[in-house]
Image 1 (cartoon, each protein chain N blue to C red):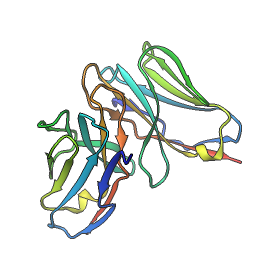
Image 2 (spheres, rainbow over the protein chains, first blue to last red):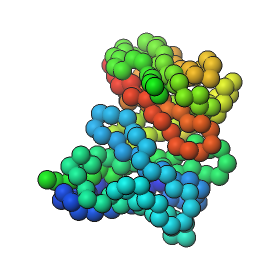
Image 3 (cartoon, each protein chain N blue to C red):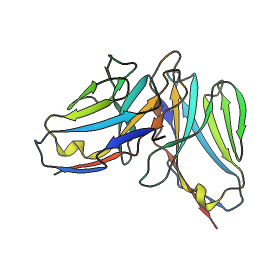
Image 4 (cartoon, chains in turn yellow, red):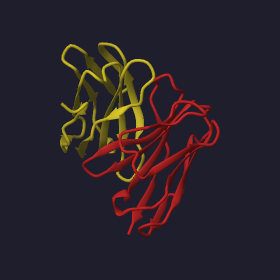
Length: 111
Length: 112
C-alpha cells in the first residue's frame, strides 16, 4: 500500500452540493494530516489540519479522521465553482517528520 | 509579508547545464523543503533541512544538491541538468512542529 492514497477523480458535483474527498494512509504516516488545495498552475495552500479522531470544522470545510480505518476525509459544504481545484492529502508520522503527499483528487464544481 | 519566495519562476536549460533555484522565507521557520511535482506522480520530496545547518535526502535526491545558507534561505542546485529533471519545483517551510507547510509559488523548469 502506498503511504497516502487518493482517488485521482475528477469528482464532479453541482454548485451548492457537498463534496466529499477521501484519503487512505499506511501505518507510516499516522499522526498528523493535512488538506491542501491547489489551483491549476499554482502552489498548494493549506486548508485544514487534523491530528485526532473525529471531526474538525472550519467554515464550509470539515476534516474527518478515523485512525482505526486509516482514512481521512474532507467535506466541502455548499460547494462553489471557485472550489474547483485539486485537493492534496498529506500525512506525517510522530515527532519531527516530513510530509508524504497523495497524488491529489481533482474537484469540479459546475454552476 | 512575502511568506516563501522562489526564484526564478520559469527556466529553460540545455542538457548538461547547471543552475541554482533560490528559496527564502521570512516567517522565521526552522524547517525548509524542496519538492518536485510531476503529472501523475504528485509531490515528491527531494531534500529537506530540519533546522539551520542540517540537510537530509528525501525520496528523489539524485542529481540535486542543497545548501541551507542561513535560517531564511535554502537553495537547490542542479549540477548537470537532464531532461528527467523537467518538472515544477516547490520550496516550502514550516515552524518545525508539524503545523503544515507554506509553499512558494514554484519554479517551472524545462530541460531540453
